[in-house]
Amino acid sequence: MRIFLAIDVDEECKRILAESLRPVQKKLQTLSWTTPEQWHITLAFLGEVTKEKVFTLQDELETIAISRFSLEIGGGGVFPHWGMPRVFWAGVSESEEMRLLYTSLWKVLEHEGFSPENRDFHPHVTLARIKSSLSLEEKKLLQLVCIPQRWVNVEAFFLYQSELTPYGARYTKLRTYPLKESHDG
Ligand code: 2AM
Image (cartoon, rainbow, N blue to C red; front, side):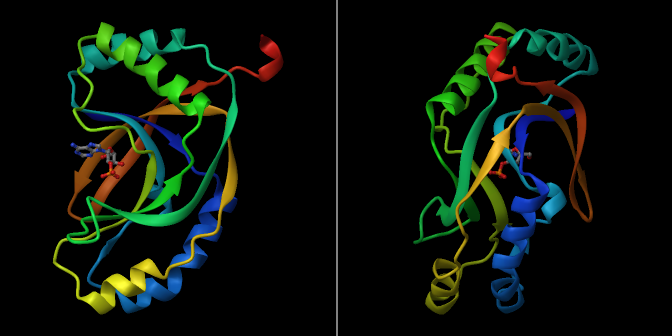
């Protein structure tokens, strides 16, 4: 199974994001736009993992005891850089709480034999994948997209299965890991 761990984007935030993208989506139809059902913030992509390993991992992840927190989604950017954009994303605020969740997850994952990726953690919501090179004009259109800032409450993280289909990636939630209510101590 191909699996990853992620935080969700709430419905209201998705609605606002979708609205801010609509005009540019019409103009840039050569981009592979992701759909609101696919939007999430990846914490760890684990790739192909045996079912047995998923079973143990599912339980190990229950040991994570982190409190709920809020994060801010907004603004746009690209990976790796504007010279050769490959992914167009909505930004996610860096915060101590997010770092804590990320490092706590990786402590469990490393214990289970997974190795962290070499690249730095840049939380984001992937909005489009860019397969061909863009003209200056197309880049300008993307740079001018106004994605409003919005606070999102993070009350859980999720273990997802990713299935690659001819119609794009299909993500299914395998397990929900609720975060602690702040007054839980
Ligand atoms: P991306 O959106 O930034 O491409 C499921 O595939 C999720 O895991 C996607 O959100 C994807 O991030 C992320 N991911 C991270 N590394 C990946 C990889 N090597 N292959 C596929 N997805 C990866």
